[in-house]
Length: 307
Image 1 (cartoon, helix red, strand yellow):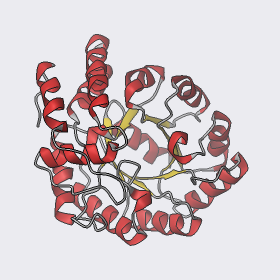
Image 2 (cartoon, one colour):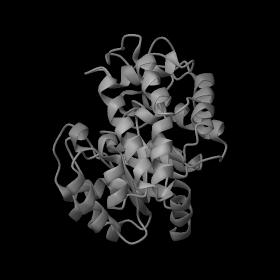
Image 3 (cartoon, one colour):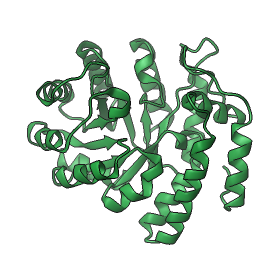
């Protein structure tokens, strides 16, 4: 397992793995398979280091389990080994999460990722038992815990991460979207040796990398990958001035996403860029047209050509 985690780290470090939007048909419930292929090709052409499928931006927790299975299979086939695919299997009930975990292992996902159970607060003992159950169902697949307490209520503390390292032989690391850079630093300090830290908060992306995160997972990067690819490449090359420049660009783009319609805005950008991904899963709102032209103008002003 250490060899698999090391190989995965080598492929993800110094790059961004977009939290891929989920292409849906017009009804907002069924996966659009051909559109998955187009989105994958678009992102790989932009130079991403991996893909995170079915996470928060991918609306995984809002989709029926059958559609999630189809999404995971379709993405794995579309990628065909070109970059690592991290498959999100988290659910609010263990039975669904287990079924998704076993399926992800069967289609040879490069890693599985599980968010904490959400809505109801839980203590660390229960969270540890949940993660342990899932990891044991895929004993040959690297496992990431997913920390996003601002959405899930339950987060992953540094103390819990240390316990996960001791209890889970397959633990590859953590994906943390925590908005507090101090928390990210504490996770970096608490992670077992060899762990992969993937930062998900876009506004502090550069700071997270500087604190020791190995790479980024970004929702906006599924629609606007250019500044995130540029930021991670600049940081990996030791060009801090360029990395700061690209972080400022990211922070100019983020407020342009419509308030209360982030996923709708991300999907609208992709639709406007000629990558048809359909609407968000109802009742998430769609977004008005014009998001992409405003962002495109910023990218062009900063010398970032679009793919």
